[in-house]
Image (cartoon, rainbow, N blue to C red; front, side, top):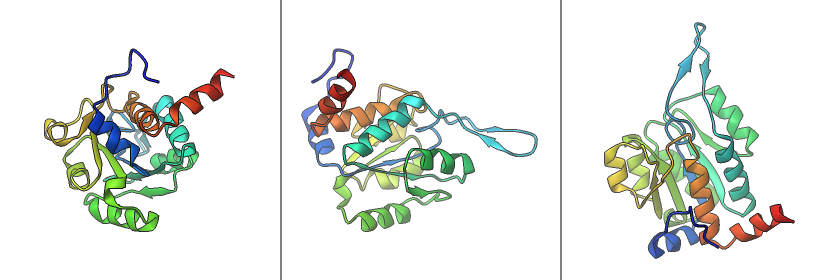
Length: 183
């Protein structure tokens, strides 16, 4: 079922999303709005959107694995991802392809069975290798130009949830999840 406020999704994007077994997410600018907060002791703070987290949990329940590959290292990211049940957490990987290859091998899937969601140039090497390349609405222009799909939401503002819902709709699992809340 498609809802009126859901953007019309082209058939080729739905076909790519139907084939997915893995969604790989960048952190800063995708799961967060990209702002970095530090206190005087150097402690880092990040803000994650609750709807993104819930979408991640629902997508995992539907059978799609989630991985995170970030160029930066952050204890906050590790804590949030573990809270969401994500075990494939790769931080401090400015050259993300090695982590991507390790994840694909570990899950024994083909690159076209993976999607990657990014916002900046560091994400392009993976985006050109996956079956579905996704950019958040406020991504760098070069990333948006090379993405298969661009979200209507901004990074850290529900963009991940938008993609989780899109994948579940394409795979026919969204209605069952929705109905479980309507009982």
